[in-house]
Image 1: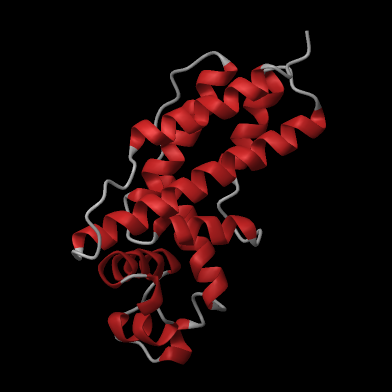
Image 2 (image 1 turned 180 degrees about the horizontal axis):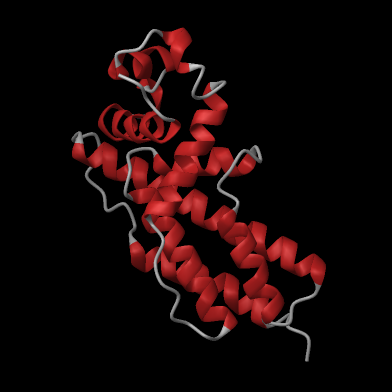
Length: 184
């Protein structure tokens, strides 16, 4: 059977969701596709490129229509969409945060946040710092929430992972600080 890159990414997401990031190896993915490992490299040159493609696909699948007009409400929508997209797949937060951190992919949320913060009247340096702070909160909160959900499902912990309520309050706290710095 002949595979296209999209097929490889699709199967990689299935392996990620079923077995987790630690089990998503190029060798395993090739076996899942019925390919020799060397044949897989015709579709993706390395695991970093594969993870970037997975991250971008996770974000694409999680896209929602924007409804907010005000800059700060758009920030909330962008952050919530990012969180939900990452939570939809096992280890999704780790994959997306890693791809973003290494500049391999998953750049759209940062671009959208920068635009919203600029529209809110923040100066250039604050746009960059605000974007990074928001992303750090989303990535960190979601990674912790995802780890807690997985640990709870395995019976390893019995605490509430701190869901959307905690997340939304954290975003609002950051927005309070950003709003205080808006140019008049």
